[in-house]
Length: 293
Image 1 (cartoon, one colour):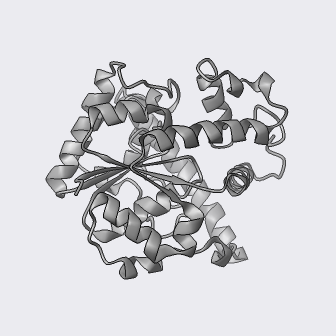
Image 2 (image 1 turned 60 degrees about the horizontal axis):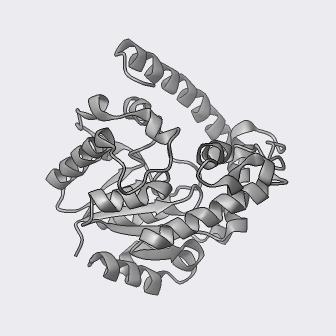
């Protein structure tokens, strides 16, 4: 049995669903996106659940009273230098992760850290935390691309979000490619003809990197369509004895996810306005505390 689990997957891969399942077992202290560039901001004003992240509630509630985070966290971990080899020294990152893992173990005997920002750092994570089980979740690339585009369209409120261009930055895709292109020249914008081609190159590199280090790989489509056996394999890998049948209600197949009604859209717009004010206030507080924001 592993007391420490790292969930790793691309943006829009189904990683939040997997994190939610671990969270709902009640056996793990589950930390959401510890490398998120806006983590300090969200610890002041929480990130509300996206409409497609069912049962997530407050993503960051498990960080409550982790007081040293403000002194240890660096937002640059979510913005640049996405590649980290197994032999590189990154003491500040290690101290930060060691702190939040130790704090999690104090709250519960087992801990889960869910990452969308660790793909090209998995070798380093494996070398520093060899006891951890790495769970990889991935999705059909076409469906993942469509999800990224839809989320970008919803965020900007328009159909054309530059998805046909090589510099499309939905879910920070262009930022990742630009940052990684020196190590992986195929990701250079000049080597792709459109946004999807560049995305697919990043997807393939991510998939290969995960297969190199993951203890188990779970396909999102298999998890939602054939839940019991797939979850059973996952639980066997990490040593979890939670009741699988009791968790099935937290899995909603994409085909059964209903679109927002007009009243829900109105509520969403209102919440978005409130959130913008809340996040602005959080940034002001961080500036006053002279913390990165």
